[in-house]
Amino acid sequence: MKHPKRPLRIGLLAVIGLIGALSAAIAAETAVTKIQLDEFDKIMSDKDCRCMIVAMAAWCRPCRKELPVLNRLYLKYREAGLSVVGLSVDPGGPKAIEPVLKKNQVGFPVYWVGEAAVRKYKIFGIPMIFLIKNGKIVEKIPGERPEAYWEQKIEMLLQGN
Image (cartoon, rainbow, N blue to C red; front, side, top):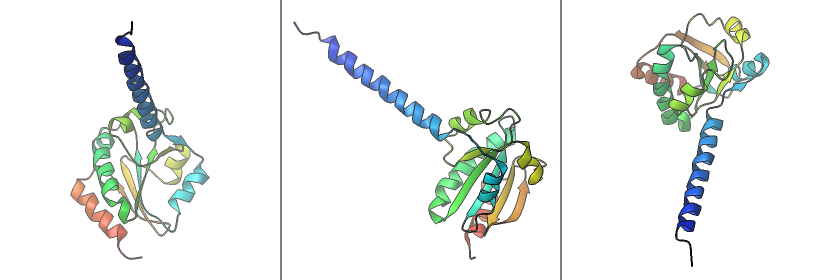
């Protein structure tokens, strides 16, 4: 006699396996990479990049509030050449911001450099966004801003040389 529950069990195990694989993929996408300051300097000075560097922390309410807006704009403008890179300034290390990134399904890379980046780039408040064009910081903007403000800044960043 066949066991009618066996195909159901196999199907259930397949679904559980798929959920596990998807969870691992999401965790990998939201993982914060710990890098050295000189590696982050290369990102900041990339002459071929139109980039927003977003300094943020898990404990920062305005950062958490603005993150979905920045992610939405990244998804909208990435095909036009916009890069967005997160810089976690959490003193507890790279793992602190990961739950916030996962919750907001952030699609851009996020790095943790440590206190050295805070000092070198004079990050005096967060969120703080650096607009990078042709390897140069063209603007440094502290504080949370409305989506329309960022959209205007991105459009200006993507124009011309």
